[in-house]
Length: 262
Image 1 (cartoon, rainbow, N blue to C red):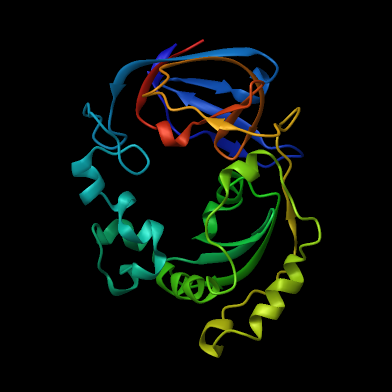
Image 2 (cartoon, rainbow, N blue to C red; image 1 turned 120 degrees about the horizontal axis):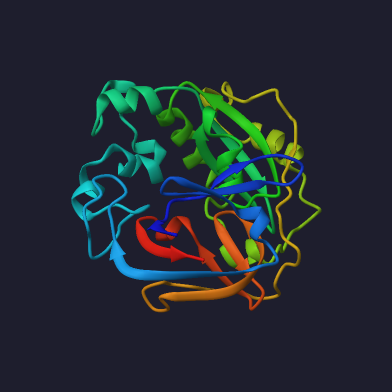
């Protein structure tokens, strides 16, 4: 099959179920674990928004003009505190109203450290899965993305906001971390105008990934440098395919790349 890559879809069951939409086909990726799979890049990249051929991709697969104008690539995607949706502003006010001027969740996830993140409420648990989180707790629910961003900025003084992808893929985990305790300790440290959004929901969400064996070390595959991947798949975590050799492939990072899948 030949087509352009997009991020994998996921479903939280007893073990995360992954699927890859490949043009009109749906590939059930969990079924490929234990098998040899081959990806061969054609040399072409197509923008995920306008579908024009582009030499380089930006963000999650945009050509440069779309990266600088499309609402899905707005600066507030990375930095929620910059969001203007609550003011009726943004690159596309109608899109912003629908996607950013709605309930957002600030959450904590645990791996080797505790990480803070933000996403709209309708994007859970997919966001946690994309980040490869093992455990997660909802910390707060805010009326829009801007307020969630304000809270996240304050929390960065205590927690990281980026995932160490190497440790995540090697499943390096600190099982002494207590998300519920960290959540309520944080409540006493933050300004009262932010703690009003804290959620009473203290459920710890646990996520298990389809991985037969976690590697001790990993190296990332870049199709621009190695246009052919021919490896035995041993697992999937986050948006990464994990291979028996210790190599890993970030599907989302290669959004828009045209490949032949075997």
